[in-house]
Amino acid sequence: MSKEEDMEIYLKKTLLKSYDDSNMDFNNKYNKGGSIKGNLNNQTSSLSNYYETLKKDLLLKYEDKKFEDFPTVKTINTSYGETLEIINTEKIDFKIKENNIKEILKCDLKLLDGIGPHKENILKTQGYNNIDQLENHPIYSKSAKKINEKIESANFYSLFEYLKILNKQGLKYNTMMAASEIEVENLKFMDIETMGLSNVPIILIGVSTIKKNKIITKQFLQRCGKEEPAIIEAYLSTLDSDSVHVSYNGARFDIPFIRNRADYFNIKYSKHLNYDLLYNSRYLYRNKLKNCKLQSVESYICKFERLNDVPGQYIPGYYKTYVETGKIGPLIPIIKHNQLDITSLARIFLQIYEEINDKLNY
Image 1 (tube, rainbow, N blue to C red):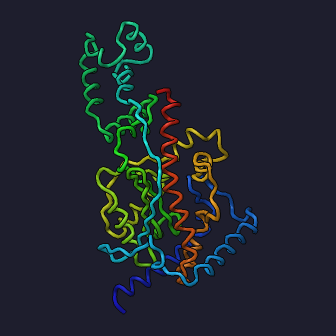
Image 2: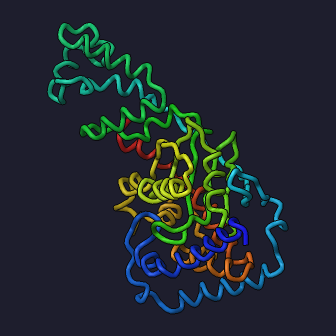
């Protein structure tokens, strides 16, 4: 047996064992959006039976199907070997409205050290209505010029970090406001599917990019135990230094998970800015929705309900059945679930951006 064959058998066993070892924790704790789930024993047996029946139906429906039968699926090569790439394209009306964020910042005199709300009111009654005018103030001219230069020279990335700092200082700014300065194609809507909560394999990575009036989704799926480094490398090849993640609970789950698995395989992983929409969803919708899980927010904003969607807690079991049988049927809802997660993020992103603008009275 070759070293490669030995590694494949080892990793394949790891896929199945990771599911068995972490299944209880995954089912009881993990839910997209970072919420804590109750014990599955409290769920009705009919729900479990439904997903078990669905899995059996999928095995039958796709019994004679192979990956090669689908025109959107192809095998790709990476330096870690072959893996599967699935590409889908949809139309989307994705336009980020201008919000004049730089002019808004210039009208906030509190950006200068030593100026609070009371002092700002006094200065404005004296005719200093923006930082441009403060450049002629006998006391604040130097610091006003410094702040103005910082604002005027800011690109999206420096503006994002500046707004983040201002928010931590207690001012009303939100990093979503910097999105008016971004090149839309740099947004990477992403999501992963795994065999558990931590230190287990990633089975699928999805990423969507906006180009003109289309959203192009690429998904990288490992078909057997040896393709995890290949899907990680394939995903990272879609990113560059200007890329910005858009995720849902990605700051705590997806992105650290990819980084840890990349480290495991000695794959270089560069840091990127991240719009984690979970936190803004909680800010905007916690009093409107029963919870802020992705699908709850998706239903509220996108106005549709998923049909035959397999929730995250069932995905490891479905994937295990695929590995054991070699039948692709149980993979179909996993792929669709992941695709819906990331394409919905684009629409949720736009809605949150607009509501943040309105809520903060810009």
